[in-house]
Length: 406
Length: 225
Image (cartoon, rainbow over all chains, first blue to last red; front, side):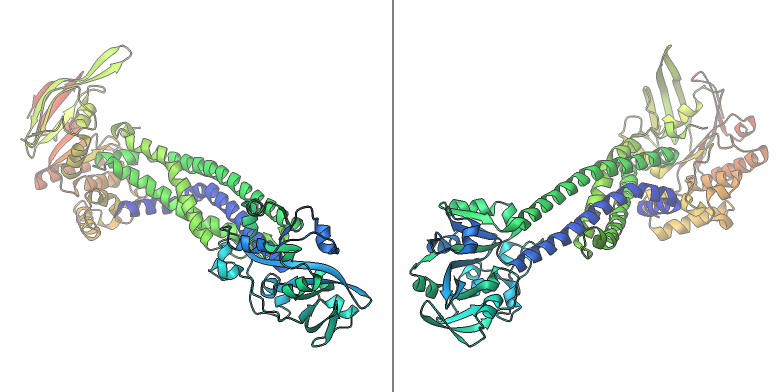
């Protein structure tokens, strides 16, 4: 027999007490795991949706509005192309992709269309919906997925390489949005004349439900030359990781581009940031509550156990058990309770997340296995912290006073 | 000589002043003695028993065990002496309720960090010696009072101590069972040459002593062999 076996036998023979002792810490851990499991999947889903939408940050000329950007008026202000290089050479992280654009409304025959000059690869990489149209095989991962850094979000380690805008759309080639293709009766490999220049339509995009459906995309340099505004762009669209956005990406961009307007697209980013921050706060509050409630509960359980076993402690001390043996007995018990509470809490919380996730958040929750490790560590820390005082008092008992005859 | 007490003084602070629980007590116990300590309630019998190996610290006086003073050594060393050289038997048996008979007997061996196999072997031998080999897997609550005290005796001798301290070992037993236990203690004393110091109220139990100490108001009033 060993002290460990003695502890296990005692736990096993007093199962009902064991369940009571485990209850608070298990439920506490379960609540945290459930909240975290749901919020992580929720963040991943929104991040995936954000990526599918494309860019989420716009760099516009000072004084330009988002309306200017969408209406693409002839006199809409522009900003220098050098700003792309300025971002590329900065040390700012969280910029997953950039797409400088020059956009102007032009006449094609009798029809008014929006001509947009793009740097194709970066444009394509920033729009997964285009990828699904067969233009590229690059898979874009959710930029806000936990555990991913901005540098890895596209599976590329070299930040410079990732940001490099490469001009591969041939001069004279263009891509047409689905709506404009219908209006102008365009089809692939069919020529089109824009501002007196002949372009080959290389691709008709599938419908995206965005403003891109009404646009014709051509090489940025061609468009700049054609419109007579060389080295200028209307906007730089940026796909930023939303965690980076919440960490101040916008202000960092404003610092290096002082005479521009840097803004996020849509409420979805801010909503997600707020949701992320709210969930973090809720988890933190829960964590503090669980730490105190769980710690007090385990401490109370161990103290009751110590009092119940005063005579046993006395006889052990009388027979030659050192104080550290008594420490070991109760701290080992707390450790076992902590491990069991962590495992049960993880299982219960994950189960709750899997079952309730679809009903409460409309998402499918899968187990996050790393939480098992965190659950055990947290539960053990709470359990040991709660047991320290009762264990110290148990080891200090006078053996003879605990053996007074009834 | 195995144990000697010299001028043992144990004082307690009380509302009415200082009380001498042990008032300059001196005695000598030889190897193989069966010492009985008698006296009225509050005479200091149990205090004497508990103070000999540091479970109660003395106010003054010397205690010499096997030629070495032990009244002034650290708690850790006293704990080590108790673990290796002393066995305790109490009136209430003090068995650990969730351990089986054999597991209870193995506890002193566990504290000495003896291997599991050796623990089982020695505990089984002792239980056989005291006639409880058929009760090895029983819990204390499944045993009679007499059987529980025999388990406590087995636990007190399993680690081969040189001294057994027994505090009213027959106090909770009827006369027939008391005699049975006393005969066991006598057998252990004679066959294993283990010195026994037994505190008792019972004149019958006191009759088993080869050395008898009678305490009154913390003083030895009779000491004879």
